Amino acid sequence: MSVSRRGLIGCAASGSLAAFAEAAAASGGRSDRDVRRGHFRAIVIGSGFGGSVAALRLGQAGIDTLVLERGREWPVAPERHLFGSAHGITNTMFWRRHTTRWPAMLPLPVRPNLGVMEVSQEAGLDIACAAAVGGGSVVYTGVTLAPPRRYFESLYPGALRYEAFHRQWFPKVRAMLGATRMPDDVYRSARFTHSRLWDRQLHRAGLRTFPLDSTFDWTTIRAELDGTAPLSATVGNSDFGCGNGAKKSLTRSYLPAAVATGRVRLRPLHEVISLRRRRRGGYLVGVRRLDADGTVLETLELSCGMLFVAAGTLNTNRLLVAARERGDLPDLPAGIGTGFGDNGDQLNLRSQPLAFHGGSQGSPSASAAFLHRDFGLPLLVESWVLPTYSALPALVTFGMTVDHDHRGTFRYDRASGRVRLADWTAEKSAAAARALRAHSGRVAAANPGTLPLTLSNPYQFTGHPVGGCVIGHCTDLYGRVRGHRGLYVVDGSLLPGSVGGANPSLTIAALAEHALAGIVTAGG
Image: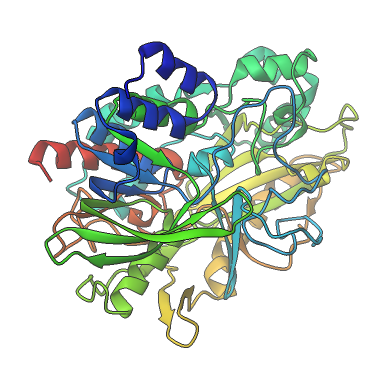
């Protein structure tokens, strides 16, 4: 069966990248039967920032590639809401949970479903990660920021030259994602009153803010503001997706470019459960094929010569640590599972005596400030929104620290057969919490009538888990796992427990671009 160019365009317009990928493969002369085959030259586990980069660059190199994604593919639906939020809980928000669990969100019952966000309750830390085609780009808040040179150079291997990332890899990713700063008309709108007030508070405290690059689609944001698009991002929704297309997620950049090569297939609702070596060389990947409700339709095993693990920090550690400890890949480096960090993630509120305009506030983050000293740890602060607190006269700050010391380890529990974060304690998050509290106290002191407020959250939380398969330690500088030809890691687990004073998406994608360029050039 052949498919015309018009047919390919029709598949793409329908919103199904998976259908587009299979149609593109068929148009290249492959049969329908070939779509169900079990061997590929390359398999990519995960369709987030690292996995999408790998898929595109492998496809462009002419390498027959399959992308496996456990989550659902969510179409852009401008006329209806696809995702829930703090103001409207749905069963599609959380991955296989019976109750909601999110900062400042009441624990409410939900039906277990294949929602867009997994929240794993580890010892001492809740870890959040995406479960959807497009990975974290569906649920993040769009900030596209590189770590400062001094911290990149202090954390990452010296052979990863910052100048190369500054001049080549970071700009390459920004261009692919279409990251831009918030336009002035959006910043000046009523829905972003909080952004202007946040900047004003910091300026009064003598702190310099700078505008952030973002992957929000400002055309859609403007449509929300003028009432021609359903409200989503401008009323604080972001953490569980924006179904109206307000985010330029990976489903609008790397992924469609990858499947358009005709060499890349995408299979959503395929959950990887095991990895082992193939007797004839390469790797075997155990997979559960799911339906949209999470029912296991079948269990199968796929094979490949090149295996790219990009399942996100939490699930990459789960897969690799389990493979080593169960004896499926017994020679994996002992360091895999170590060097995990929470990126110093912290949330903080300050009261704002000037009343808001009376409505919810927009989720895109306009500004940030970097505080290199005075608070114990270098601290990046960003203006933020929590929809749960939208009715309060308060401003939200999201903080991240540069931390070289506090790390955790993933270990395999033989009794349960599960991999868990074994040694994270409250003390490992305490230095970051102290830094943000000290910053907020200084800002409040410079703004009469303003007080730092305590966020009511009984557990430590990170949406930026990084590390566990640290680059230069468990892998070479291109993500090749030591001692395992054809096995690569290209996601946030490469990062050394701290991004270095930034949100992780840009650095993950830039490391993946650097890695794939080296792998393709070397032929493996």
